[in-house]
Amino acid sequence: MHDRLYVLTPEKTIVNYTVAGISARIGAHLVDLLICFGATIAISLLVSVVGWVIPEGLLALFMGLFITFGIFAYFILMEAYCQGQTLGKRSAGIRVLMSDGTPITPRAAMLRNLLRLGDFMPMLYMTGIISIMVNQRAQRLGDMFADTVVVRTSRKIEGFSAAPHRAGIHPLEHTIGDLGGMTLAEYIAIKRLCDRFPYLPQPEQVRSIQSIWIPFAEEKGIHMLPDKHPIYQMEAVVMKYGRLHKLV
Image (cartoon, rainbow, N blue to C red; front, side, top):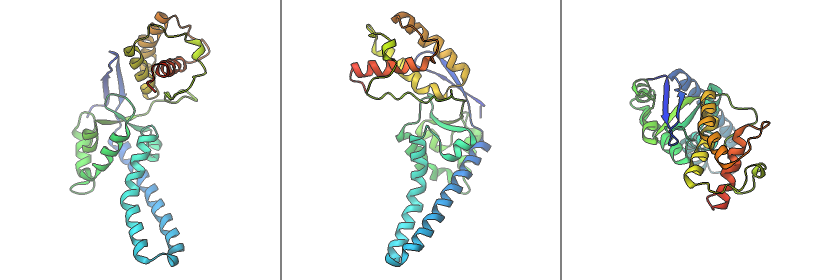
């Protein structure tokens, strides 16, 4: 297993991440299991309260479905819609990304967690642990099939999150001009940078801004605001171009 993961982006920028160690991943998983166990106890207590009005067989079916699917749903939904982090991963300072450094997709979150069953074989998560230890990216079987990696998180800028890329008007659109002559390739490059920016180590954030955003802004005559972080104007560019060309 290597401590660093290097990714060559389509914008020809090399970014690197610190691969999450096996101890951090085990710790995160134990926290998640405790949360799931607590939820199961809470549901069991609730069921015992209302059990007198629900047939016993139906109660058993409900609990079986909750234990079987509820735990998988917790991992899948948290990773897919909470920036690649379950509560356990957040407490351990790690997150799941696609292997190219972009945020994990819902499909990948589902695939890597459904294949967790294979990692448990033959017992006590043995296959998953061995896979993490010998794989250069510390990937278990689910990660390999889903093309995901688990990395340590970098410190985010205060009040800063991933670019929204929603339809609408960004409050800084008036600062970026009409984007005349902007190409689809430029849009894709800046959008990918916005997507991956919150998860990049700080030196890579600076390098990406210098190599991708600043040349683009200078070419398009965009005045960079001294009191705003560049990511906000980058978001404005993505949202405006996407809206004008019906991409969002």
